[in-house]
Image (tube, rainbow, N blue to C red; front, side):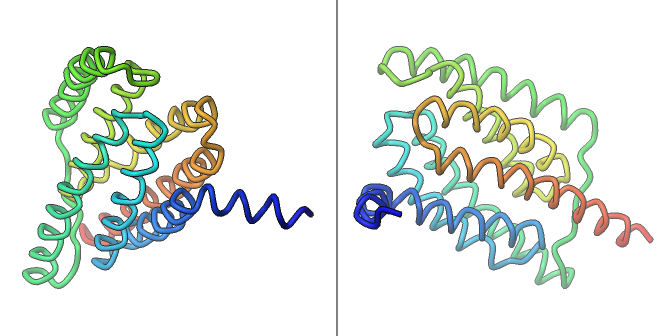
Length: 198
């Protein structure tokens, strides 16, 4: 193994590596419904804001700003629930909520795609659609809806291809792991919901 090449890679990709590690830890903590997930996710949001901006994935960079806001909201919302109920309880999402979320994602994709074409972003329409639906998934997660995991699985699978195309191999690998963590989150949240119902 060429240690010089490895050290150069780590130096050039240190923010992406740090973002990968904190993202994995934050999502894993979220699957466990642990309140500590939020400050870890916040650190990952900030790191990836810089990574995506440098890669000219402006929709993804903008998404990180929204993620920061959703992270702060989710942290406060979960904290309130833990104080009142003693645990993070899962909330059901009805058909109207599903349809509203998916429609909002579509509208956001069109509007953001239009803007990203004008600012010269890489992959403007695809990145805008993934960004828009990531916002919906984040909102659902902050509101403690199991549906967030289904949407994350779909979005993250597509993100893998986008990041491979843009040469962000480590981030693509991260998103492959995020798909697995989303499946784990879906399973664990379903179990928690069933236990609460019982």
